[in-house]
Image 1: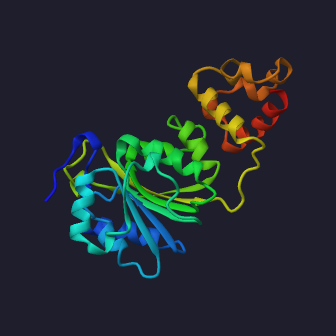
Image 2 (image 1 turned 45 degrees about the vertical axis):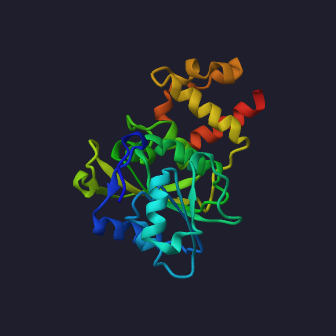
Amino acid sequence: MYTLKKSLGQHFLRDENICRKIVAAIQQYPLSHLLEVGPGAGALTKYLLKIEKINFKAVELDSEKVEFLKKAYPSLQDKIIQGNFLDMEKPFAGKFMVVGNFPYNISSQILFKILDWKEYVPGLVGMFQKEVALRITAKEGNKVYGVLSVLVQAFYETEYLFEVHEKSFNPPPKVKSAVLRLRIKTRPLTIDNEKNFFLLVKTAFNQRRKTLRNAVKNLFDEAVLKEAIFGQRAEQLSVDDFAQLTRRMSQTL
């Protein structure tokens, strides 16, 4: 048996129908290598292990769950990595998919890690807190549109698949949940300098109530700041707008 650890944000999925829907969603990709993040008690793992002809690995921080999983699923012996996903090296040499019922307290950090690995991760299916899922998929003009929206959508197509009731978990979380699918863009945006792009987006939303002219004034020449687009607020700009402004920014820094 195992214990639930609130400190690790553990809410284990117990609805078999939801498990099957998540596994079906990841199988819509051509799979050869697959990483599960946070397998917990193995609700998804037991189905993922049945997928034929894939190289499967799982990463789990909780040593107690690692031992439980190895005993419950002997085939996991050499496929499970004990450690923190946020600190780990890439688990495969080539490209791989990611799936998981992600710990809600680090789900945004998980996505930033995926962005670091975007050349290697063509797709992802994951469970998020509904509030975070809505932010990830929000478009410009939406009040929850922000840093996470722009940075993820710059590189991935986002798809809000379905919501999951609290009673589908043990223990039931106090928040709503939703499953998303990300697919790497076949026609990525042209971003001259990713470091500048990230800096611009984060700076713009750090003072989202201000116009861009005031929020990002330290990143552009005064002449450029006079242009009409800088009279808007960050939430009014599309992902492509930010990419285009990055090109202007790169010329002045």
